[in-house]
Image (cartoon, rainbow over all chains, first blue to last red; front, side):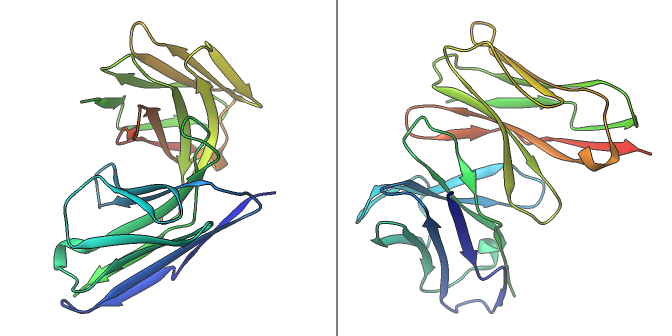
Length: 112
Length: 110
């Protein structure tokens, strides 16, 4: 069966520090991969999605970036965190564009 | 741009009641609609997926319906239990994005 792992689960970082959140999917090949952010009291916002290795689409301009170095690995990064980057980050995958979406357990980021 | 609305934002019911959660969307050109459950501080758990050509899906005590022409979906929960307490989110799939509602927070009182 397919599983999705996301880490770290919790992260507290100072403003201006770098960020790296990692997500891996097991049990499937060539998944569509997604990074979402959920801010307190707000809906989920799509940040990035990828349909293949090295193929990244950005939905929202910001100081975050994403990379897909391997088929089932998706990384969310920042060179310098802002206070506004605080939130709950969720990685997700689907087998194809119109397929069911499955989420990881999330990473809570607090920028101080 | 697609807009997804969920009403009510919060709902409290006594255990054993049947209940309906509502989801509406503005653009009927969707691929599918998915219902999720989110427990506090956790990720989203997929409950039901309805493809655009389908009218409803059932899983255990859950039944979801889809009316694309009117831009509405409902999630019916039968015989509610305290363990059903969570936030329920609906999401509609467009060409390149999944548009989420802000959810309905359900509390089932023992």
